[in-house]
Amino acid sequence: MSASPVLDLVKDLIARPSVTPDDVDCQKLLTQRLQASGFTCESIVSKDVTNLWARRGSAGPLLVFAGHTDVVPPGPREKWESDPFVPVERDGYLYGRGAADMKSSIAAFVVAAEEFVTAHPDHAGSIALLLTSDEEGPATDGTVVVCERLRERGETPDYCIVGEPTSVDKLGDVCKNGRRGSLSGRLTVKGIQGHVAYPHLARNPVHQLAPALAEIVAIEWDQGNEYFPPTTFQVSNLNAGTGATNVVPGEAVALFNFRFSTASTPDSLKARLTEVLDRHGLEYDIKWELGGEPFLTPRGTLSTALTRAIADETGLTTELSTTGGTSDGRFIAKICPQVIEFGPNNATIHKVNERIELSALTPLKNIYRRTLENLLLPSESAA
Image 1: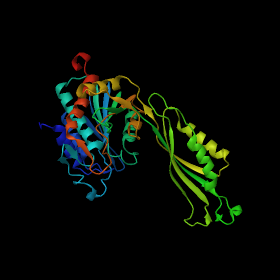
Image 2: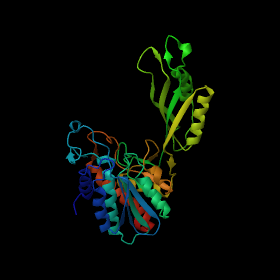
Image 3: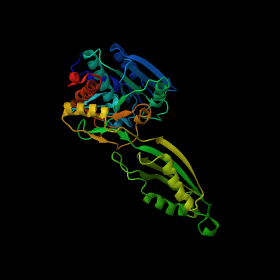
Image 4: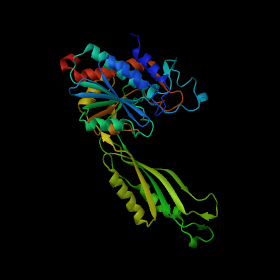
């Protein structure tokens, strides 16, 4: 076996330009590896998205490693110091699209599982991998489809580790034990178009919206809780007018987003916002889009097993955090009571010259393997 099996595997994965939703046979490569270790592998295709459910064992508890083989587009090639789909080792780093988000985690999952089952072929419980090629895109035919399939047949995980890049300064300093929800809206305020010299014959929707929007921006939606910061509201775009300076616009359109904690619900946020609009007498329409509900895994069996593994491997005390955007953890949390995200440094994700420290690859794999030991071996064996 190679002196660095994780490095070898992540290079193979980076070399496959698997921009959403094209998996470019990443999952076929992983299936071959996993089948050799006794995993039963099921390919679940939905539209143009490829998903993999691979499981070893039938007993509980079931620990799932979840991730995505797809990557975001690399952007202009000339901005990269080397080809984004040709993995390059340089100055202590491995460069390539997906190096941090999240092909290194996937490679570490697989090698950790291989090492664990080789050393403990009769381990308790079951191990599974859930992989999709639709995390960076619409996320409508990926993990959510697999989770629904598992729910229908009663095959639900007890624990799940999502390999998203969560570390900030050092590998293992931050894990995500939850994520905020995302609720977006497109608000159209209707006015009456007219000549600016005859405002009495028009109704300016910008003027009507402005005081209502100022009130909305000042609202304290909630105070958050032990794990979550307070809910936030942000306007991402505001548009009105024809481009001429002498025309009162006929409508104003505002795009906005709530990032909300478990202290609020989509319905409560909608109700409070529309109450302000109604009170200001606006004629309006809102189209809502719920990007994801918040999820939270309080301190418990999984967080203890993972943070212990991190401490044993790195000496660090891990911070549990719920900051950042949404992830596929929001789908898994509907069928799994304990979901935590943990992976490498996130400083270069979605950027040109994405990279991961070469020195982080083996410790990352070891942390995943140690977590398996902590959860699926008798306590005296895992000590």
